[in-house]
Length: 111
Image (cartoon, helix red, strand yellow):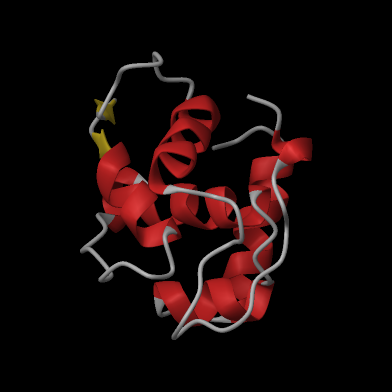
């Protein structure tokens, strides 16, 4: 799946998700970033379905396990589909600076 074909627009946290991106696509992005097999729902202790739900701005926010790096992975998924740092921080209940650090670590391949 090429991310280039996905639309990268987001309206508001309350009423939209990345346009053209369904939960299945979010799960596929989470799998790819985690290095998981195509059919995995969890990988190395991370709940990939919860990560995809966290990245779906229309879904209820799941509980993510910080010790297992699920918030970091969710932030990277949101980054991949074009969600802003501000919206990502609000969605994950953290600071914009933390999201920036997570994105930098993801770009360095540390996810």
